[in-house]
Image 1 (cartoon, rainbow, N blue to C red):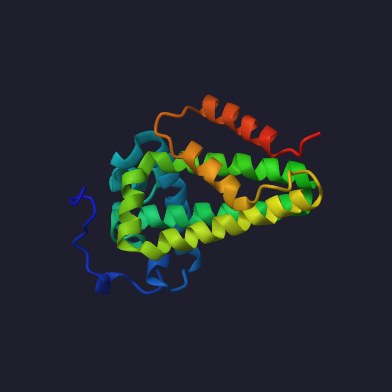
Image 2 (image 1 turned 60 degrees about the vertical axis):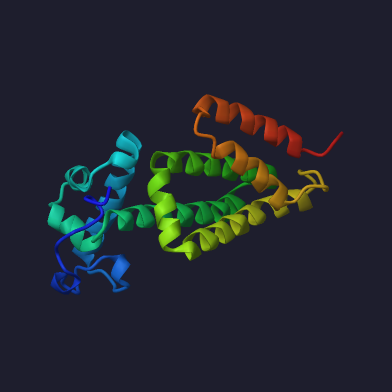
Length: 206
């Protein structure tokens, strides 16, 4: 994929007020809209075409020119990282939202379902994600810490309320979820069934 991972436009040619988040500079309003459209488009294209999705397909889906895409994401791996960052952000925010809106057990169940959807979506571009982790090992470590923290928010609350057995902790649960979600052959229907089994196993013995 090296031909899709490079771009001839140099960083010096990218206007400072249009540069994407990869530059670390703030986006003006129209550039921010394009950035969000590109991320939404990348999700759609990755879901449809997996890791083989082209930059041109993402730009077309977003309704912008390829030049606009490259101004925000000079390399294809930058798109992958941006989508991944946003997915982790949403998973963390979901834990806070569920705790604010739901009782302890429903909040935990809702977050577990959100995690399974998150993990399943990553299987469409696993090779690119591994490349991102190799390029930036801290990306994996930070993301895992944030996800484990989000799980603790909903899990510890449910356990304190007596809704979860006391001899389990969030690390145990993450081990169960991780092994299930990373299977390349697991279907959506199987995921749903296995998640129900895990949820049943979390409940305190009667």
